[in-house]
Length: 305
Image (tube, rainbow, N blue to C red; front, side):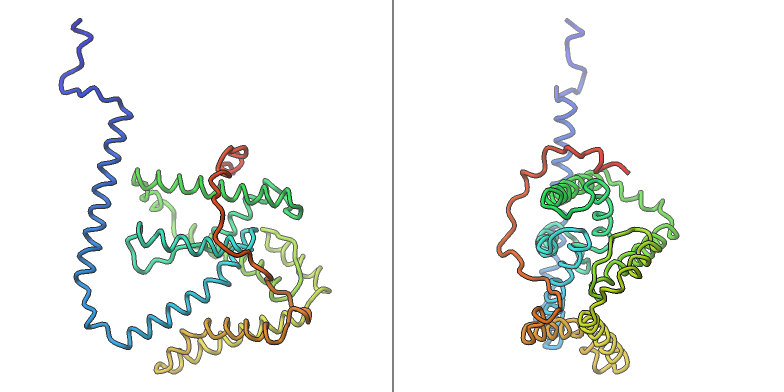
């Protein structure tokens, strides 16, 4: 009977119950600290010192980012091998979520080029060519499941405070990775300026070979449109640096080029004159994708090399 008694200072809680209680306490303290900081920051903000100059700078910044996130999000979606509307959804919802969960006013959240490239490179090895509808549906389903696994991994890393692992990544490794990825990403986007499709490849010399083999399909109209946009962007950026009092020219450059390109394409009906455009984008909000989370039939391939 003595051995059946619980040990001293024991509450009879199981290990799982203790872990759940500690996690709740951790989250409560974390959110309490965060909202206290946000409250002090809001109280310390004095709108009387918010001058007209700052207001117009914020207006220009908001318009520029808002207009640029549309083609940028669609480009990231195409780079990831997904329909363009996925890029728009991916650029919209993370901003709302980070406004609640985030703690930095300068950090930009949403799709990025390197993540899009890694997603396309990994899923292409599992699915293969996504030319038919069956492969396209499987590819989109695997992309949703990959996002779920990444989210779970991030949550676990945050709970166990494993951010220190990045200290062991040398600067040479991260610099080489980002440089190599930027070259691959830049080459993969050349097909949209040259006007002809090029088979996807992660090897630089194979990509260059594919560009040379398809040079006969070169579309000069697409090249003129894309090349002229790049030239205008570079010129506006140079003028903004050259004349400090005209710095607003550099900030509004992307907004001006995007608006002008849309206007010229619409008024000139360039889609009927051999210039490819994005086309119709599905309207409305995305449907719930929770039903695509399970079953994880390709779980081993998604977490494997």
